[in-house]
Length: 294
Image 1 (tube, rainbow, N blue to C red):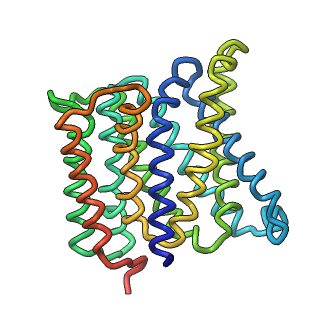
Image 2 (image 1 turned 90 degrees about the horizontal axis):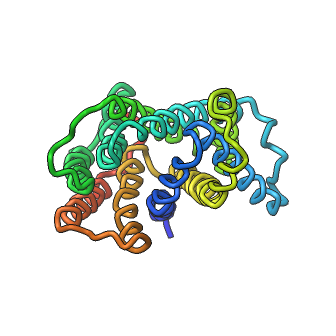
């Protein structure tokens, strides 16, 4: 299997994990504040990566804190992850799920726009893929009356910009490091930065933590520990614009998860949206892989 195929498979796996975690994340918000929720799940994600590193005798923990460059890159990725996940979780409290799902996934359009400032040239197929996928996301959200922008929508829009920066940062730094080391550092940074204000303003009671323990384990170990680690590993082989379109398929997997787990119905409108998104991703995959302007 070639590197591009490996990258596609890893990112598709991340999108599937995140999509099926949607139900768990919604449940977690019923018991905990957004910052304390993010803090705990990212620390659990960091511990998951440490557990995986324990079985690697060649690399292990030796180089985890030995490189200043790795520490700097981990800090950069962690800051982007903290702001992206923080604005998203807070914004979800003040908007509808349909609006949040659509607006968050607009990072598929923000990534190539930001890339223009990096003097990157994109194939027309990349732009076509994004333009096809965006209306697909809108149909997938199930919103029939149009988008009614609220305060929460603005927060989620800000999170989409930070998700785009997170993708671009990983595009730049992931090929230079062991993906597990980078994943651990970004989780640790995002977790600590979320926990500090979370403890100050959202300190939960013991009963709230007990009610959310299963949700925290799933989102911490699988969504964060495995999903984001797969993202870092996959972006070692693919540029940010390709990664953004593949990861946006989490909305499709969320719809499938709702159908299989919650027995929610899938409308023709939503099926059409999923088809448009898949078409957009395929268009993007036909574009040549290019990381930098030559």
